[in-house]
Length: 233
Image (cartoon, rainbow, N blue to C red):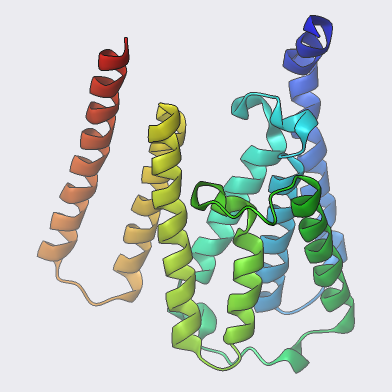
């Protein structure tokens, strides 16, 4: 067991754990040839697939900072979902006839593979809010379908998914007393708030107050975490 654990924690193994998903990400672009809107959706599905690969028992035994699949998958999901959160993305009617057959097949195959991973990891039947990253690509796929009927509803749903994702990540960090996960959740919420500055009408006073509140939130959550850890020690 110690030998196997050593191999998992070895620096060379960590390098490969980042190079493999990174090479998959770079080469994946050659399989996507569709319009801008659906391309973003395909990448959301792909990042969800990478994240669930990182949840396999072999990779999940690693520390998060050594798990390239989870790190690249979660960062990719956040970035692509932030793009989807802008109203401008949904202004053009996302009719299904704009999607070519090649891209549709790629999306379906990766989506099915993601669902297969969820079942294999025995997570599909046990939904947990602190594991929302695992289901994010499925939720976004459903949201894209809604976009053919209501642009406003789609953008609202994406913003809601990102917000819940941030809150659940903060809770997960607090439960595990992990400052990295906690601040990652705070960063997601902060990015969402900053992006809403650009597509909503707010006065500079309101924007300034929101920035102050975000800063207070960062300080308060970390302060409470430190106090909690001191009590336990």
